[in-house]
Amino acid sequence: MRGKKEQEFEALWQRHGPGVRARLVNQRLLDPAIDVDDIEQEVRIRLWRVLQTETQVTHAASYLRTVVNSALIDAVRRAQARESSRRGGEFNEQMHTATNNEGLADPVQGQQRMQELSAAAESALEAMSANRRRAVSLRLHGLAVNEIGALCGWSSAKARNLVYRGLEQLRSELGKRGIDLES
Amino acid sequence: MKVSAQELSKLISRQDDTNPPTAEELAALVDQTLPPDRREAVLNHLERSPDSARAVAIALEPGATSGGAGFRWLAVAASAVAAVALASVVWLGGTPEEDTLRAADPSISPAPGAVISTPDDLFSWPAPPDLSPRRVRIMSAAAETIWLSEPTSPPVDLPAGTVASGKTYLWQLEDVDGTVVAGPNWFRMP
Image 1: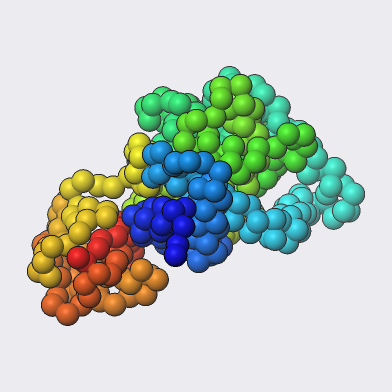
Image 2: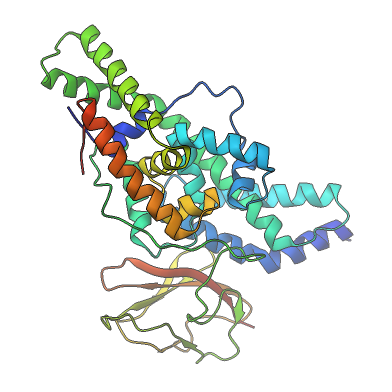
C-alpha cells in the first residue's frame, strides 16, 4: 500500500508535472543545453525531498516555479562550465587576432593590450551612474530590456531609458579611450 | 580599435567574487523573494558575470514568442566569436505571474492546463496585425509531434482521433517558417 507522502507526491505531480514539462520544453527552444528529461527528474527529486521534510506544500505552483528556475540555472551553469575553457580560448584567440590587426604580433604585447582594453572598459563604466552601469552591463551580457527591468525592480520605461542613455554614454566614454563599440 | 558588445561583455567580466550566488539565490532573485541586502550583492555579481546573467535570463524567460530570445540565444551560442548588433533589439516580454508556472496570454485558448471537454474544441489566438497564417502543432507529453495543422487562421478544430482520453498534450503556435510564436502550453483530455 502506498504511503500518504507518495499519494501526495503523485497528486501534486499529476497536477503540475505537465506544466513543468511544458515550461522546460519551452526553455529548451532557447538553450539546447537544457536536457528536459534530466531537469524534470531533478525537479521531481527536489519536490519529493521537500515533501519528506514538510507536512504540507503550500502554493505548490509557486514552489515548483522556484524549483524549476533553480534547476534550470544549475543546468545552464553546468553547461557553461563545460564550455568555459573552450570559450575562453576562443575569446583570447579572437582578441589576440584583433590586437594583431593593430600591429601587435608579440603575444606579450597582445596580452598587455587586452589588459589595457579591459581597464579602459572598466573606467568607461565607472564614469557612469550606478543604475546606468547596471543596466548597460546586463544589456551587454544579453538580457532584454524588460528582463533588466524585472530583475532590478524598474518599470519597462525606466529600464529602456537607462539602457539606451547608458549605451550612448558608454559609446562616448569608450570613444574617449580609443575604443569604438560596434553597433 | 573596434569592440563588439559580446567582446565588451567578456572584457568587463570578473571571476573574483568571493561569495558568488547559488542557483537557489538566482532563482529567488527571479522570483523577487531574495532579501534586499543579498539582492544588491547578487545584482552586483550579475553585472560582472555574463554566465550568471545568461543563466538568470533563461529562468526569466516567459515564452518563446519574441525577438529577444533570439538575441540571447545568439549571445549564448556564438559566444565571443560573433559580433552581435546591440542597439536594435528591444524585447517586450512579461514577468511570471503569481502562482502560475509561467505567464500565459489569456487571449490564446485553450489556456495552460485546460481540460478539453469534447474532441472538437477549438484552438484560437488573436489574429496577428498582418493576418499571417499560423500552424498549430500538437505534441505528446514527451514533446513528440503528433499533428501539425496547415497554415491557417483561427480557430482550428482538433481533428478527431488525434488525441486520446486521459492523456496530457502540449500545443504551440508557429508561423509558416516553423518559428514558435506562442507556447508550448499543455492541455488534458478527460
